[in-house]
Length: 200
Image (cartoon, rainbow, N blue to C red; front, side):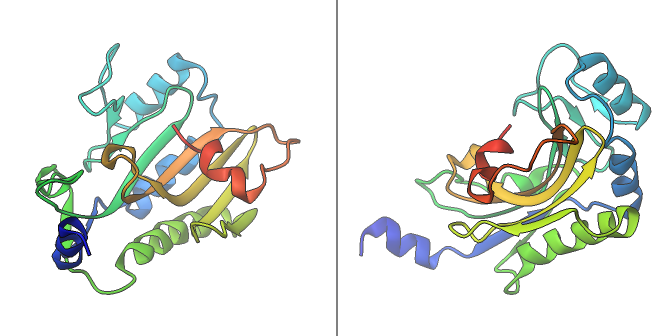
């Protein structure tokens, strides 16, 4: 076993989350049929929601807006909002400090109970199920074992799913809500193509 592998084994896992309340879920559900490929429509929707826009320039982490709760919102032609991260700290790794624990509205739990990350996903998916009914698609990627819950909303899909965290060079995972275009008459891409289809 290498020194890095041994250190990884000794490093406790962390789950950091910024809550998605039923009120925030309702606000996002109300945006699900907007044309997110139109920057003016997207900007007006976020301002109307009380989200703070970064204006003409992206923020330090490429975000384009912040919710009042502290979520960072991404996407040039869609809404993409991570609400939980699972990772460990390593002095020579992708995360050397608990970055998310220091962000307003975020809380990290060191060595959380088993299933804590998935529980966050289930809770947020539950909010949208209460608002929109059961997902139109509920599929699991065999390789990653990621579960995608997807609602069709006009010419868009609203998605609650996990994915690879780009800021950790894809070493760790995040959980997100996303609204992205998909014509109402277009089939959902095959499950093994969903990670690429939903990347922002």
